[in-house]
Length: 413
Image (tube, rainbow, N blue to C red; front, side, top):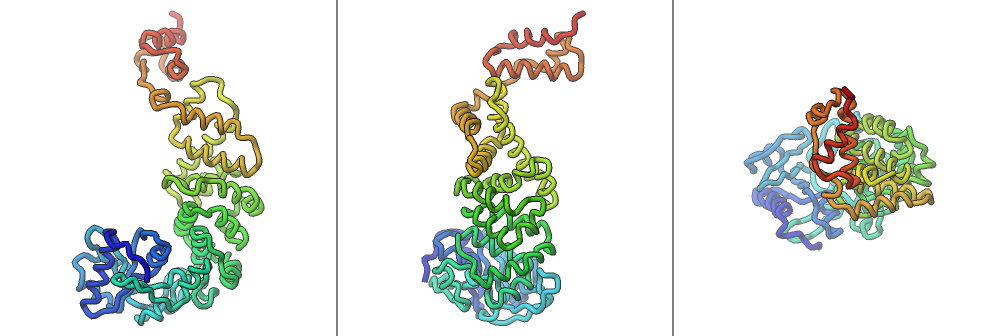
């Protein structure tokens, strides 16, 4: 028995889905990662439900459904603002593409959980009573802190080539050890990750980089051979000895952009441009690529030297990626045993300067520059930048003073 998050709208909706199925005479349970999370005392972000009901029976019971994988017995049910994946108990037949089953046979709960990846994800929960149904030793492995493949790990990893990376991700999230035969099977199947789409790999990396033990994750990727398959541009030795240590130094919790910082740390030795190429290969969005590139470029600017004046410092501190760059650079330099002088300097400035210190309304415009006799072209931008620097340095506070600076750039008549 476990404590249930009664009152959480998402859980209550999942419980209602189970109740509707049961009232119609079907067996139904909450399954998978949600059960694992609740055992840990966390409120899951989503809930999957396994049932004896066939797809056509599920569709008849609910008003709002989405047919996402009906051939595999999977229906998405929408209820009270939430969406639940409801799947008929099944066993899978063949995995020709290393991702999806070639066919399925509808079956019972016992056989259904045998096809799943790891024992800690093979538990079923009665959302009414809190009773756990465990056919795979998942509770024992949770108590022991072990990631174990269900059944033959070589078979599990042959079925879905992403599972070796998922094992590492779960270890990264939980801090658990990967059981010996499961670990050996990951090493054996590491090369098969090359058949997985870059989008799926990128999604797992994001989740891994959000986990509290991301340094452990990198060490496991290196140990199993997955690192060289995913990041052939990087040295595994450097990753295991420096980058993993740097990732250990990152804050264990924080905002949702922690994975951006972690990826920046992993790719740091490549520099911003090559890092961007790696991210492009992994099919990250342009927004993510730009964010990581900017974080790395800002880190390099912080590390370069102490700024010549307040204007130069403020242009660095006011960048939206400043906290990310400081976290990444602190982690890397600490791992390398290098001085944190410039990092500490900018950290102090970032905490002491307010928004009003960093951002000003423009005192003059491009038209003002032209009116002062500055010829159209690059000289206008140079003149306006000089005014901005003077504002940031506290030397100019009025339009009249700004116009005096513009006059210095005017072409003599």
